[in-house]
Each structure stands twice: as C-alpha cells, then as structure tokens.
Image 1 (cartoon, protein in one colour):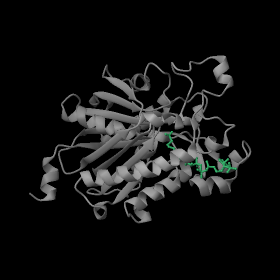
Image 2: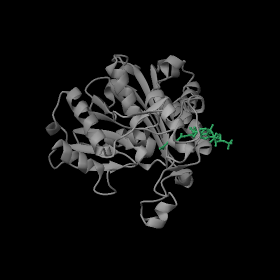
Image 3: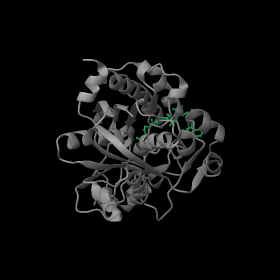
Length: 335
Ligand code: ACO
C-alpha cells in the first residue's frame, strides 16, 4: 500500500480552528534597559527577543485564554455548545484551584463539560494534543478545545536580569476533532525527566514552600532558572524530538515544509532547524515580538502562519518543545 493510502487509513485527530490572544501592552528591550543592567544588544544577540507582551494587573491567564478560545471556535465555524471538553495547558494558572479550564468554562458560558488543566510547561500544548488524540480516538470526546496560556510576567522577578528579559504573556488555542481526510496528527514523541526539575522552577506557592512572608522575602514566588544549563538540554532534546517525530511519521527531512520549535531562544530555534537539516526559511520564529510564552508559543506560531496564508493544505509540519520538568515532545502534523 502506498504512503498516501496508509495515512488515509490511520485514524487521526486534526485542528479545525485556531486562535490567539496577546495583551496590548508592549515591553521593549529599551524599556528593560531602564529596569535592570542589560542592553538591547545583549538581549538581541543572546536571545533574539526585541519586545514582549505584558498582561495588565487585572488580566489573568483565563482572560487571555478566553480571547484565544473565542477566536479558535469562530474560525472552526462552530459554537461553544459543539465543544465537549476543555483542556488548558499552563504553568501560570489563575489560581492553584479551581483549574484555569474551569474559569475559562465559566467565561465561555460552556455547559457542564469536563474541564481541566495540564502542567507540561513549554511542552504543554504538545502534551495536550497527544492526550487529545487518545480522548478523541477512544470515543471519550468528540471535539476538544485545547488552550495554551501563560502569564509568565506575573511570576517574573523584575530584579533578575538573567530571567526577566526572556518571558512574555499570551495564549494560543485549537479546536480538535477526528480527521476525515488526509490531514491531521501523523506521529508524536513525548518524554519527561523529573531529575532536573530544579534547573527551571518556581520554588514557592505549592505545598513544598507555601506562601508565607519569609518565603516571599526570599523571592521564592518567582521563576528561577539556571539558563545556560537549561540551554544545553533544550538544544539536545528539541533536536532529538524533531528527528524522532519525523521518523515515526515515516517521513524524511525533505518532506517537511515547516518546523515550529518552541520559542525560548533564537539560538535554540536555529540549532533545532539545523538538526533536521532544514533551510532557515522553513524554521518558524516569532520570538522577536513575543519572547518566550512557554506553552503558548507553538499554537500562536501555527495560528499566525495559517492566518497569513503561509500554511497550505497538505503541508507537513513538525512542532517541537522543551520545558520545565524537564519535559520535551515532538509532533508531525499534515495540514
Ligand atoms: N543582560 C546582560 N547580561 C546578562 C543578562 C542580561 N539580561 N543576563 C545574563 N547576563 C550575563 C550573565 O550575568 C553572565 O555574565 P558573567 O559571565 O559576567 O557571569 C553572561 O551574561 C552570560 O550568562 P549565561 O547565562 O551564560 O548566558 P547564556 O548565553 O547562556 O544566555 C539565556 C542566557 C538567554 C538564559 C540562555 O541560557 C537560554 O536561553 N537558556 C534556555 C532557556 C530555555 O530554553 N528555557 C526552557 C523553556 S522556558 C520554560 O519552560 C518556562
């Protein structure tokens, strides 16, 4: 049986609508030069970031998530009543509980459908897609609203130049259902290693270090990262995830039209593209305008490329991520 027929036979899930939402407020590298000892030159050459979006005081993750979700539902040509499960990928929930998904359910006036969060950090959207495949193909759900949202600037220490220049806020969403044609998710690869969790984590606010005045005085409520160590793992694992995802789809590098790497650092993005031997024009990046939005970077990237008419039916794309946990994942998808 030829490859095309095989793909048609394999049951798959597909994206039927995408959306995104970022806060209006822009923080540029020049603005950061006034806050910490840094420079536009350092940030641009070391990370590729020029500016990022910042949620306002009264803008929680659910507000951004609802914006992205409404757009994805509209673009799918359905209504909220056609959704039977809401999944939110985030490490910056509105509240430890209830889940951000439940706040989103309320905001969207959805019925009493199952709604829950997953915490896969930067790999969260890909973890959510892989989980959605099981839920949809097993018949548990028919149509899932998957949202990735982060308000990382709310857990950013604005006195720490090592981290505060890196992150931004935003949300990307997708509506997923079973595919009836050749498009959809062709393969996946997902892993985690908790042994290295303390290289990138938020020490406070959980049961290990509860919110108490003395912990807040030590800045434990903020994201802490050993950037250069994370960098090495990110390059290695994102490259590996890309290679594995392509291999598991039965494809070769020459078949790939676009790579969507998680946007943590332009040097990691480029290194992942090189690992797949892809020319630069096939490696997506929007890090210059948004910074690192953790789980939200990939769905926002895919949404932007589709909205700009650059993603065509039949294009093979690879999405690949690495984040706190550590977690890493890769997905090959036919548009
Ligand atoms: N401005 C100026 N100088 C700075 C800044 C800054 N904003 N930040 C750090 N420096 C300095 C350091 O103090 C250090 O100076 P020293 O040599 O005098 O000590 C020097 O620059 C080099 O620091 P490194 O940390 O070694 O710089 P590096 O090249 O590794 O870049 C960075 C740092 C951008 C953080 C990079 O390591 C990185 O991108 N790491 C990976 C991030 C990532 O992938 N995260 C995973 C996902 S995020 C998530 O899950 C939420």
